[in-house]
Image (cartoon, rainbow, N blue to C red; front, side, top):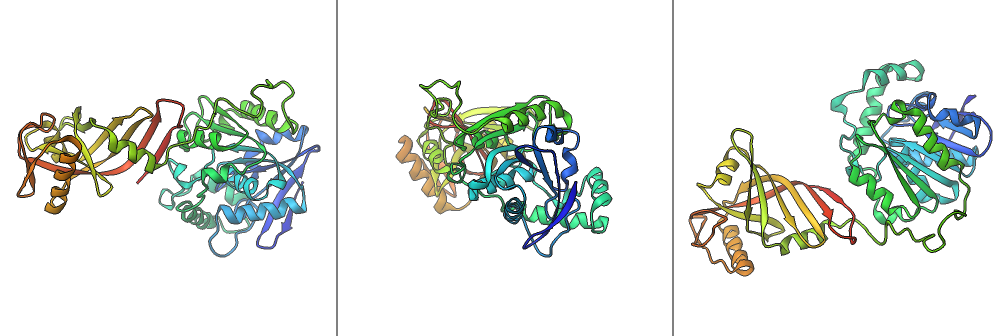
Length: 410
């Protein structure tokens, strides 16, 4: 049975059916509660299901001005206070972010948490919402069937979602550790969410499980509805309190996590600077890769290296500046993807020469904006052009138990 509820800042349509412990289902962006009808909505034979259409979605009208996950979470809090009270929250994509915000800021309202293909930070999206890509036709058709607005208004909704996705959500690891209830992080093996991001979410939630549904995409609820429903129903059915079958020696102390956290960029940067030998991968004119060891230094918080103009790597970079630099440390394997740009500023070149002297004992001279020296087997014959790496993506892969994987965008 569906009805409207007037909230302080929005008018929300929601469906309320079934009986038992309340479970709130939160749909993804540009969709509405109908997306659950052939999957999670079948849980109505065991639970009381509430399926709201988020503001601006489905049958819930839009409101003037911008909005994003924080405003949607505020709507949900008010709706729960007026209908279900404390409940289990199940959110998909955008709905997962909304559910997570409520779990952090109103833990008294959330008994269980299921986060399906969602992010805690906007950088976790591999393909964030974009007005340039337009609305998928099937979603436009579904919107036109029930929306109180004209069909074209879905473009306005997409614009609001895209604008919000540039800055929201922006939760930290400390925020995630504030979640009090048990949680399930459910993702596909070919998702629109970065897998390292999902793993960090799982690691940082104090009491969480992780499930990866094989052979699925971001549409995992439609592609394997029975499996997803079984996983979500299992978490929702568990009672609060400790697991009576848990090993008392490890209960409350998940060994799989220890105290592992993703490294910060500052931590990775410090370890990167300590490495003696790096590996540079460039692209030959015929498309084949080329990899070579090199010596590098950090100056002004930027990685620099030198190469003779006649070397293969320099000729490759002249045609295609895209490159990858990797480094191995005792705790982390590090990767930086980006572009190499020649340094033309002589003052910077002198600073790089000084850094080489301090780190390696190599003493190049600066002449006309290039380095001159003997004994640089990884750089080829002089003169040497200095390059700076303009990073675009960075990765850290742990080699021990101190850290978990990390990913950065620059």
